[in-house]
Image 1: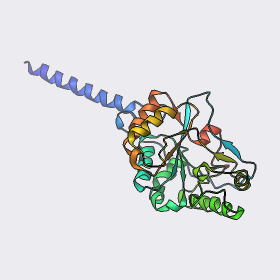
Image 2: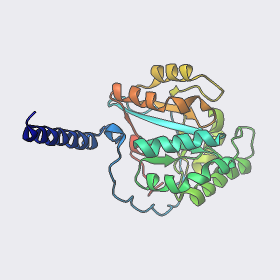
Image 3: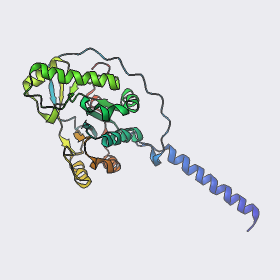
Image 4: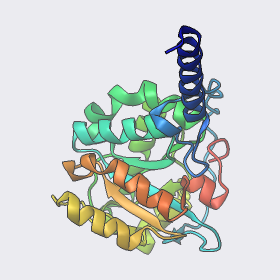
Length: 267
């Protein structure tokens, strides 16, 4: 073989390789902000967290689902009894850019607090939202007015201290159990949106990965507010499959703020 041809062939192959790498680096998913090829582009610094606004009391509206006129879904994640699952969800958000709404309880501070430094910039950028799920995760219905007040306000104070952001106007009652009396107390504190759900991974108890993925296939549809839990490990092995399902259905994961046009700056 002519030596000059060999050099030209080698240079050509190198050029193709560089072009392929550059092409891989530039591909993105518009639905979630995920960078193609597993490579993350540098993003601009997140804006500062807004100041915690004053409460705006009012009647509490019960929300089961979002609009079905577009392809948006809200993935909500409750509790946080498992340090590994909390860490897995935080990593899922950080590495893919997927938008999530967390509903943690302050009683699980040990599981959540180590991730505050990662979550604060994501919260400031509007990618992650935190809503109130009460401090101790007890059924609110048998409680006194003072007990309901304390569960919500103690969790709000914990979220503000840990993540620097308010949870208002959203709260999710533990187990989805609430009453007009509970909602009245919540509304008086500025929790004017009682968040329920119309889709679920059904993973409040131990389930298999196959079961969780089947539930996801059933429920992840436009307008769904989906309920998941940071409690049991099945979800840890299927984050990428969930993301693939979302992409294949051309769905756009959004926070509750994005779904309903609310803001952390106003609460």
